[in-house]
Image (cartoon, rainbow, N blue to C red; front, side, top):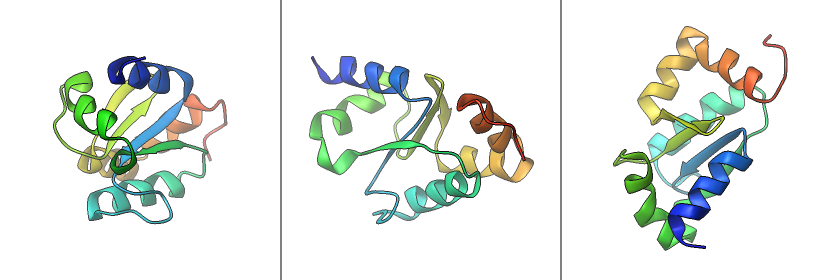
Length: 108
């Protein structure tokens, strides 16, 4: 399976997935750290891919999404955006609703 097929499978199989630099416990850039903080504050489970651990994903993801930067958040197979968009959605309350719907949980 090539990298683009793997990405497609990951975003399809995981209701919420963040492609990031590092891990949620040890983010390796400020943008990834802020995106993780917003996701954790929504109190829903999410998957992640550390792009530093998979060179093929690291190179293919910008082509897959036509989005050049990391992190990249996908909800229900759709690209939501990067750090700034994720934080804007969180501050407006939209991220909480979006993520709760994705995992079938009632929003708080």
